[in-house]
Image 1 (cartoon, one colour):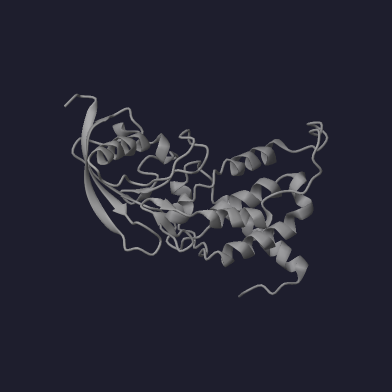
Image 2: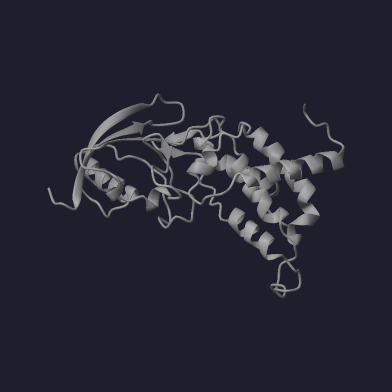
Length: 258
């Protein structure tokens, strides 16, 4: 074995469909380059499985540059693996050791039905965005940059919130499968800017209602979401979400649960 390759034992969740029973299957991943990404390791394993006439492991991926939010699995109990602020496609095999056993499972949440193996349907997040994660403006030429003054502090906070890629790791990490960090980030990126204020109340009520309708849980401040977010989204966005919703509920005279 080369000093720059490792051998691993993989325990991978295999499930042929949403209603089929699932199980962990054991595979050998041999001669894996340490400079390969985790997804490339799965590619190498799938190539071997295909040559052996076995069904390859299904997993989500797209850009493989850490910006699309498509990839994501639970690696040894942690969404996206052991490295802080790292997507699964950016996780490299040099962070593992020769002979390691690696357990790979899909994101788990009631709102994330398993499609196949490590692939889950994260369409529930799209439904939250469709409920209000946008601003209504006329299209055309971009306005002059200084026509709407924005403080440096608010601009920075809005950009930090907008860094959310919608991968859903926060939900997989949360013991309640709450989508509060995701929804909070999407609400914050508009609430902090003048462009988002005209529809702020409508947005907060609609997105929170849709979040509940999709079957997500509620936040109990465990902070696993912040810990596992590959973009380092702060739970301060959850506090802002709660404030935006409370103001909107009071203004609309809706009944606020005790």
